[in-house]
Length: 307
Image (cartoon, rainbow, N blue to C red; front, side, top):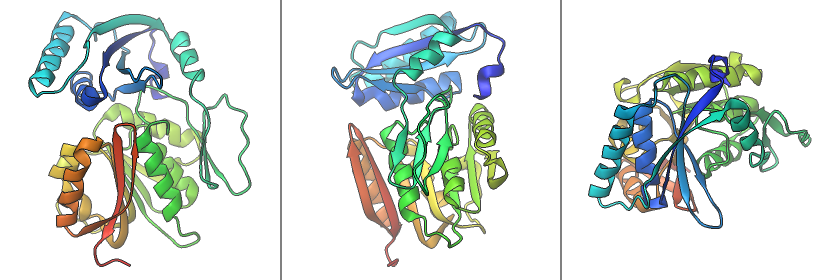
């Protein structure tokens, strides 16, 4: 992964055990304070949710940052969300321990008959006609395990019309998993961007590892600063973003979608989905598929006039 070159024997793991209700707000808080995506893990039996970031630089976690996290949790509580215990845990872990802990629960994922996502240590062989993406869990978000990512991957395979040319745009690429999968499935051109520079470094490294770097245009970009009009439009767009960004930047997203294209929206809590759906339907979109998994709901849209 991109950060493996950092000369540091230990990582500082900052974790908060919380509720599904407050998960997204804490992910956003960590992203703002640490300038990197947070990882989320939910215990299938107890339903306990843990949000985690890994600090790679000396001094990145200090008293001031700890106080900022505490204040952020208080703001979340004042918004009426239950954060549960909200206990902050900071622990040093060896990189080797961190990597091995992932191996225990990161298994290969098959997306229909067309796509296999697997870690480098897996010996799983692809079926005939199945594209393979090799991706190890790292410090950037996106391994295919999360409900929102898996929905996007399934929509990519569902909407591929091989051998027809189709363009794909990945908004908020994270680890680059969606863009890499799209390139492997034959989407061209494939473009992806993210506001986080570390995510772009990670995505480029993953693309090179999969032999897809020459097929993907990856760049750092702030969606909020992109032109409101776009000459280039895409057949499929995935926007796996927080819901308030999906609402605020709707015009910038829709202007990049072809008239008969498919827009996949993810990263949305089930309690927020109706608001997102309503906003996009008012803008001329029609919901064609949706899926609820745990507390998340994702949706695929096309334009009202499309058939």
